[in-house]
Image (cartoon, rainbow, N blue to C red; front, side, top):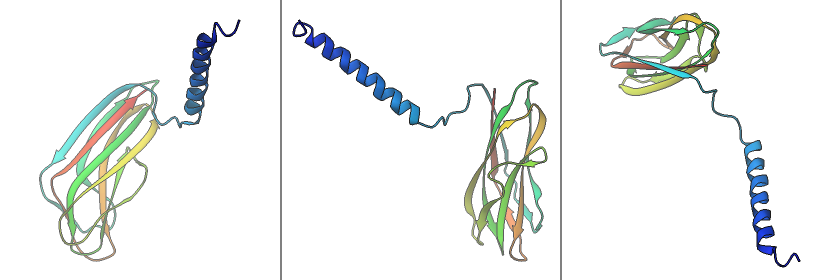
Length: 161
């Protein structure tokens, strides 16, 4: 009797085995994607040359206000790029959302007296509702010198969910 249905049973067994295997792969895969939401973005740029010799963090001039609606949270992602050089020491950058420093924190951005194109990425997951300003700050450490930056740009992406 089973001989008559061997192809049907074989196909059913293959489908069942595939489903079990697919579930096993799905179960061990990390949940890397954030919840779906409404995405907003802004692009800010400045073509002027700026300089600092401050060893404390000062704004670069790039800033953008964002609003996360009431009852929502937002995943804030900031990408910052700028050709940079320093006559002595190391240039550090960080991004802030309101008064809070975004992850991963302070970022070693450039070292050396030749302009180099540099980029850094920052983020804050589940930022609370409200209106705040995203800005880039920089400082120079490790020597008495001046840092220069020009053609800076910042892309801010907010996933509101």
